[in-house]
Image (tube, rainbow, N blue to C red; front, side, top):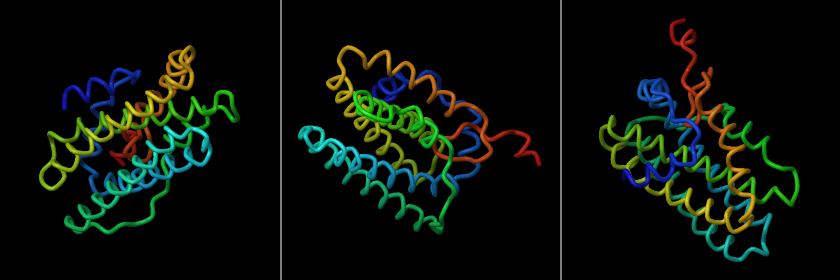
Length: 207
């Protein structure tokens, strides 16, 4: 697990704050709700890339498998919520993915690389947070999050590999810019706890 953690954190500009881990453990039902939604979003992102770039057969085949795996993860989270007696309810989306997507180029050349790199960053942040949470959890979450942490690390490496192949001379500089924005979104205080949010604003918790 440590190797997966190190691989993912290598592209993150800032670690997850300890305050987010504390907030997540104190609001597990909210976290699981958003986690389930994140798995669905991850599947839809993979499918959207397949449709956007049908000429890239290698990418399409890899993302087809990834999308199926993300949907299986969604099913696993829902089963875990059922075991814990938690209902699945609609949530307002957090700011993380929406604002990170605003950094993506609106057209090619450039858009494909940005989509691959933002997906890699999201998967890397997910793997990091699964790894941070896993030691503090009890069954059935501890095994689930350990398994998902390894899976998200694989997904990160897949997206990063395709990004390198897409733009071998420019991917590193573009990654640095996108990773800086991702770090801001993942670490700055937030008013809503989400799987990829920053820690909750302390004034809100004390109110």
